[in-house]
Length: 410
Image 1 (spheres, rainbow, N blue to C red):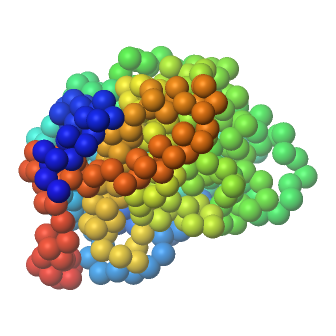
Image 2 (image 1 turned 180 degrees about the vertical axis):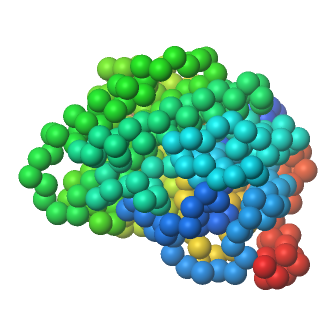
């Protein structure tokens, strides 16, 4: 079937594919840099910690800023549409001597700003509160040790200043996400104490003056991690409560909940009460395993909730996963393309008609229509989108060629 024929099929559902493709030009996905080097970064030789793990040893891992930038360029050239680059603070580039994380400055990210500006990319940012000697007993901002807390408070404050620098230089809002790995392996004697200390640390951070028009600070929860199985300080209840009370944007990572919970169901709840919502798209297999995003039911359902409620301009969409068992370029390209596919799929869905059937309790017709929609010629529209964005319909050959010429020689 051709694009023209597919377009005609969608017209029968009152879907204008030309308008949809125009909307897709504005869909911006923030791409995480840490898929390229298994979350190692450049500021520390510490092993990955904080209840997270990258498994596998596929050849070609980036080990220098130049490697990572080359790999990102290769991936970005195979991903259609708008993109941002999402950095962790551990990707600082030191040219005049190393400083610790509580002392980092905008100048340590100038090369990343230059990289982004040359390519017309916005930048997002994350404090790195893991893989560091100052993570004491699995605790950072909630530590009973005042010196530990101060170090990480100063780190997050420094990251807010760097985020302002990113926004000023790129002309795009910088989303800065706070996530801590704090928790206990076994049943704690005191659950309230760490959370109160975390709250006080956040209060001190947000007492600083910063430009909230340029920097959107988000707060992310987690259900558990490796070595943190029994108790997580920054639980969903804590982060949502703090965000609501203090005007901070909540961030949902769809790997950070119990296996029977789905972010697609939570999205509309948060949109009722928040002007903006942030999202990390990943794929958990049995736990927060950060598998590459697929074009699966939950990814489609999440984007359906965003599109159906006309919230594409209210939700900051980013990817967050790290698979070291496969070609890392393929992981980036596959996952981010699937996020874009899911948005396109949602834009090609006649939400008003489906909503009317639900409101009129015509549930038989609703189910029948939902199933029929699965057989619509979505693939032809995706291919047209890729053609218009001048990217390969099938990125396999380009990825394998780069692996042969570059990655295996590292």
